[in-house]
Length: 299
Ligand code: FEC
Image 1: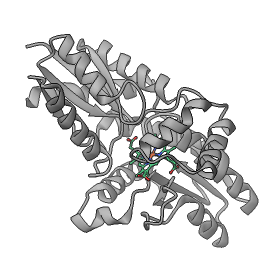
Image 2 (image 1 turned 90 degrees about the horizontal axis):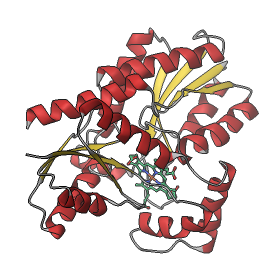
Image 3 (image 1 turned 90 degrees about the vertical axis):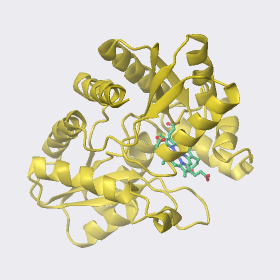
Image 4 (image 1 turned 45 degrees about the horizontal axis):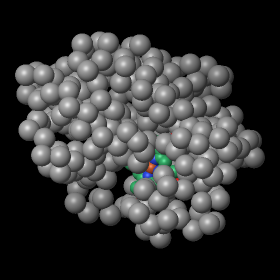
């Protein structure tokens, strides 16, 4: 049996001209209004014109291949190579047995569940005889928690230590309707946060949400910006944001936290730091490889 690893991530526009087709894909084929397009393009321009997400996804896929000895295939949700491209590449390489790993730790029907549905649809569409065993979440993987602990200790050092500092653990917000069917996403975020808070001996920490979509739906809250205001009104000296729902530098970290949230903290007179992203950290890549090998063993 030839094995493969299907490594999945969100995808990013190649350049500013690619923002429109990318945004249209996210909106399930509905083009954005000129105002929406201008606003998103300005966010990409503010982080230097492009997001490093694809490079980070490639580095993570390479790290997994080096550690597992199994070929990795990148399949993205909203940019090429898309998930069906990866399925076609696996079929062409004679892969029969694959593990599907989404580069996001927490399961929601609208996050990892959505990737899972796309894999099933692409496999059926291609008439591929192979199978993909999905990793459904890996939010308590010890090597990932080790990374977060180290990154948090460093960030706490940058704001003068834990005294008077609140740590805010965040993930991408999702529409509140996910809660109606008992989605595990908020609980899994709380479990990661609590495990890291215990390891670091934190006395002041909370869970929050970031990067909510600009839609009429109610989204999971409170949002990072609201929490900053609340903490400032209660006299907080410093806030460290640990975006543990993400594993790479990209728009939602480099803009929403490093530009937007950090500016709000400055206005509020609160010291602010963000923990570094896992990216291609060797210990983090060991953790991803361990997750993949365990899934192969489970069959
Ligand atoms: O750096 C980059 O270029 C890409 C950054 C990026 C990541 C990311 C991760 C997640 N998203 C999730 C859910 C949603 C839902 C909607 C939505 C919309 C956007 C838009 C941009 C965007 N997302 Fe994203 N997301 C990233 C970027 N996301 C840009 C469109 C403009 C905006 O709303 O800001 C709403 C879609 C809709 O209206 O139907 C829902 C989730 C994740 C984390 C899991 C993962 O990485 O797959 C969940 C990175």
